[in-house]
Image 1: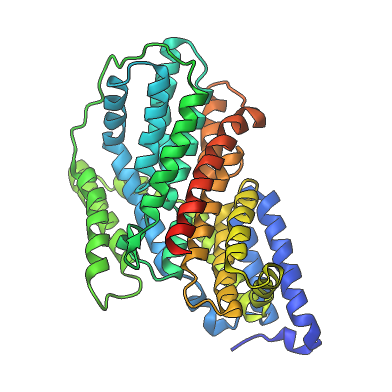
Image 2: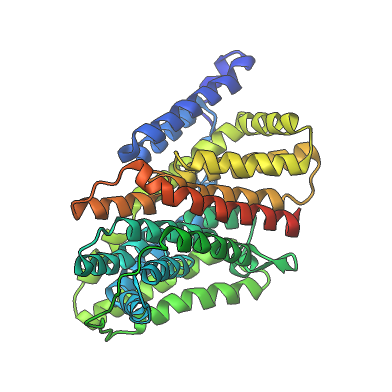
Length: 436
């Protein structure tokens, strides 16, 4: 069933009109960041009215596995943060750090490790207060430390299925389970590739912070009295791994797992506090704005796919590259790095996943894994180049602004650019060596 207004237009107008609407949508997403969800949903409605997306395809166009995984993980993270376990772990790291240089780098690596399993923004919110406390004690600027924490959290987002929205998008599109990020097709997966990138990027931080030799210490260790949220976070990981070994599981099994454990966490908090406020508190921490944004994007992308736009873009990239897979791979990685430095990588990745599937068909590539992994490496890590390239960066800058520090773009970029290049080049080389 379709409203089919496009049926009254000349055939030659169908695809160009869909592309023009998509470009307008993307411009709106770029410049109207506070209203992105409304832009995406409004655009989806226009496509539906025009007939690009039949009404009976609306529900199936939305990837509910992605929506449920993100919502469930956000809810669990809220409960996990409230337990103060992340703050305790950070305190212990600082306790073992001999000077400020090691402390900053340790916090950055800690943020990276945590963000492999927890949302990047939540990671920054958990770890940044530790850096602020240290900076106040030493009467120094917290800007470099917060930047290092933000870019560290972004890097590891590509390491696991639940590390970032882009990873969840890739996992769903490529039918990957949690275990596939560690070993895929019998080879080391993205997790190990990202760790090599982390090693290279951390080496860059040692050079950048080589002069930060002030002594640091923790005067009061955070106290954790509730370990159940930690067990629930670990439970998500364990259940996702177990599900990856069970044949014939439902397509949305990962989403069901995340939602189920979030509900268990909420029930636990209700019983523990003897209050329904836990429901409200968790609900407030779920970013419904992002969920509506994704729902709208899924419908928009299905619409332009129906119009043939995705196929046309795929054919264009294949034509420019002459059908050479290495050239296509290189274009995808570095185009993703450049674009993700200035635009949100969620709509970009959501669109490019469809484009890559089209490219694979065009050039006769039976297994496009190398292109999918190259996309994630470029798009996830590219956001570290600028202060507006990723939500974690924007969050970090916001924290600093509240503390009275205005961060200039170049201040961020002189740390972010070398860090990004080290991580991306390592990932670029390793993905091609392993999967090329």
